[in-house]
Length: 333
Image (cartoon, rainbow, N blue to C red; front, side):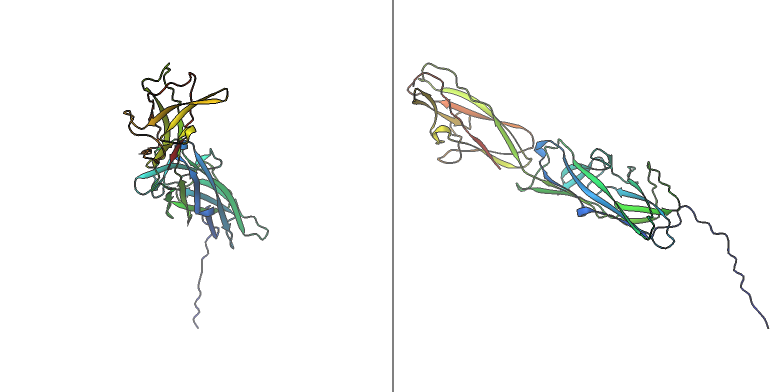
């Protein structure tokens, strides 16, 4: 009888520091990203927003107790750098922003591919029959200040976005037998990848602001000849936003028959005057009624000045004194 024996040589078991893996780790961002509401570029101020990043690991049988995790946020579909990033509307309109971690003034979140620091995390198996652990982190978004030329489209709130592919926004992780976190760096390659759904969105609102300088007519002892004066309106409107400026009728409540008045001892006297769009003083500036016109233009995001031309026509001279009227300038957009 012939007997065959199988000799099975078992060598010594060696586990490299990164060989054993936690079963699975994943990361999600609340709401699928960061949303900036009520972004008004002509306000020239930064706009901030926050979102919550949740990182979850599930430990399985024989899993390594320590997990090294790196949250990478690389370049989205419209950025060329992470500082600053760019959201877009269409192909030409761009809005600059940042994503930070740690605090509103913390490190700019990047990725190993862009040579910027990802979020570097270490998690340890809690034990005691608990196999799942979740840690949350705040992501801080900032629309950069001083971007007045960011346009709106169709005279309405305009949505700017940037989307990130699974290769750009992702969690990389690896299990270790001992704590190994170096808080300064993240390795380019970790054993496992998990995509993170992420989109940056900004709702850019339309807006206009307006202010006026007083108009002062020259002094005169008689009104036998016309008196002319000018004033200016200073305004700023969102880029590409059409607008119109209407002037009220003042105290007379009549844009075609404006009057300055003076009241003394219970007696009111008036002086006729008019406001015009042009230096020839032929186009009455009003609210569009009674044959009057409004000033119309399109915003650029930058300050603009518009001249108001005034005239007191020749008329019978009333009681001497100071005459005035208050006009409301309304910008429509």
